[in-house]
Image (tube, rainbow over all chains, first blue to last red; front, top):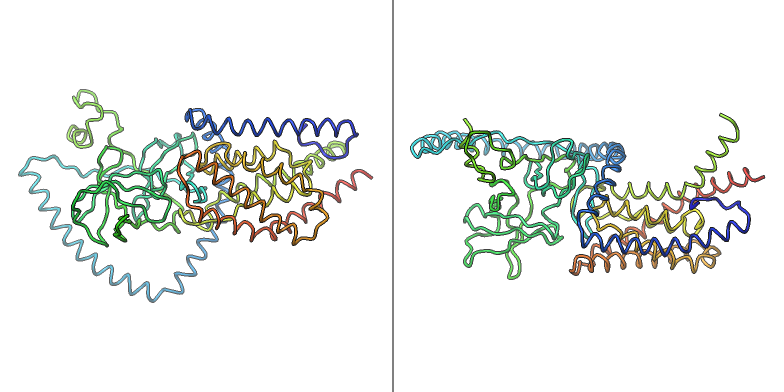
Length: 301
Length: 176
């Protein structure tokens, strides 16, 4: 009825106008109701959102193909123009990384020896992850979220950290069957427990819808400076410790700003880390639920 | 397939064209363009498409179509459900009171009126979002998004005019 064409008798047209007019009122009322329901009972609204997300993801995935191709072509063009500078930069970086590699090898040996002396079980376990494609973004005016093309069908669960090769991007807040939504660390609802690497100061990284989120709940005399690295602290158990987040970019009276390491322009794919803590403990191991990463790892052979 | 069946299919496609272009615009708005970064602002093509069809074929761009388009944009964009639907429905009913007057105007006047429509839509979304979350959002990205939306209207309008002419010609041919 609501999509009829215009070549209809007069009575039908008048009837339709009446229906449309009342439909307008009903739909406005329905929108208000949905807004209120979303505010009061997140579950129902989430169910509708997950269904619509699941339905739109396959279409968006197809539409993203040409977008990714064009972006890739521009990237390649840019790289070709800057090939000499890039080469020089990579040589310099390679030289520095070789030095770091030697340092890391030395520290690994030392670490292993110290662990043996203190009888701490080894912690190095390859993290497992799922890779998903970014198919939609929220536009960045009110919320900073991304829609991914993997959901519960690929083992995504709420709370998983999403990382790019440079560092933390955000965490999963909604999971549908074939889709999931990431809350970016820049969104005003994002709170991440972090630690400043050099000084060890604990803080909460609070998004404020700008490109540079702020450090809050700092200790009284913090010892960091501009340029220091910020990592996840793992406090609260939601995120694993030690994920790179960003570096302190400005310290003013009102705000300690952190510039995320993430290269937003190349965020086509994301890795979602599986948390060790959500794995069920092995039987007869005597490990309590939610006892934390270390005790779980300690219980494994 | 019989001729009657083909005609029915053709008419359905023409009748649904405004709604389908509206959904297409939502998908374009959702694509991570120019990049998925939190600061990358893009125009709202959806508002352009809804404005065009509300002016030229309000009988085909029904309140239900506007509601569904807004709902999909809200859901897939991570906004509170109903926020964009409500803004678009209110702006649509406001626009319909001046629709006949606008139809007789040159393009520049129609474009100028679009500035008001975008301002109203963006303002309503900003107000509703601020009420919903209980905090004042920075108006700067809202204004930038609105400016970008106004800037792309001539292109979207031109493309839709081509489609509209095609739809009209086809419907005249079908009637005669």
